[in-house]
Image 1 (cartoon, rainbow, N blue to C red):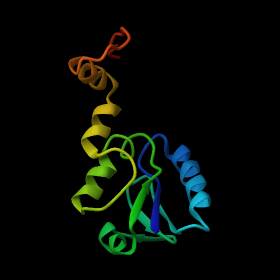
Image 2 (image 1 turned 90 degrees about the vertical axis):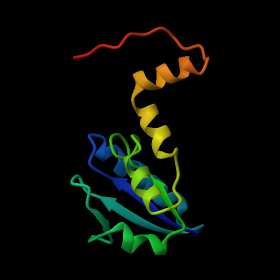
Image 3 (image 1 turned 180 degrees about the vertical axis):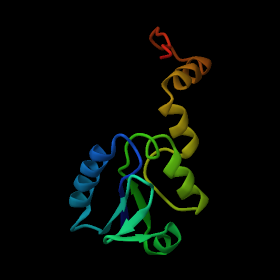
Length: 125
């Protein structure tokens, strides 16, 4: 399988994402064709140190492994982009990610779905 590992990204969790992606790259090497796709803090995608686009990348990979943390990676941002190109990727879909990323909204949806959740309050700074 040809896997593109997405890491970095325009998030406050940039450094954590780089580490997660490095672990994923190491894990997949040897059993899959794997490529490091670095996304810089401005959202520019890079392959082998050169800027690129998803249109150029998409034909070369079977799966995009989302190692992005925080905004863009966990909030459904990159999933929306990949969905727009009908690409396969790891993690939840864009809508599920967006809902789960916003903890207050996620809790409200769980309650509306009939699940019991711990009491809590929303503090607005």
